[in-house]
Image (cartoon, rainbow, N blue to C red; front, side, top):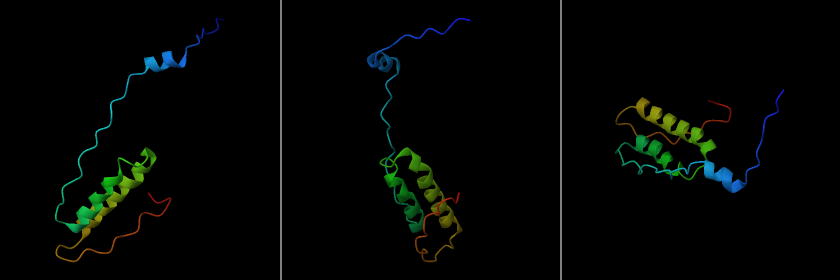
Length: 91
């Protein structure tokens, strides 16, 4: 049986094989909609660029829940108090 041949590469050579990644370009903050519930939900997106990627799922879930709350709200009624974020383990 033939053993695999491994060559030792310097870290500079290994880095040269990987293509340079382009910088992430985040969209501008959303314009106010005039609906306080929608604006509150969309305001959660303000911190997405600074938050670690593993936290993005929770952040997007909060936006989703806020938009559902806005859809379920009765038109013309005052906005309900801000709900608490999802409890841990709830998805």
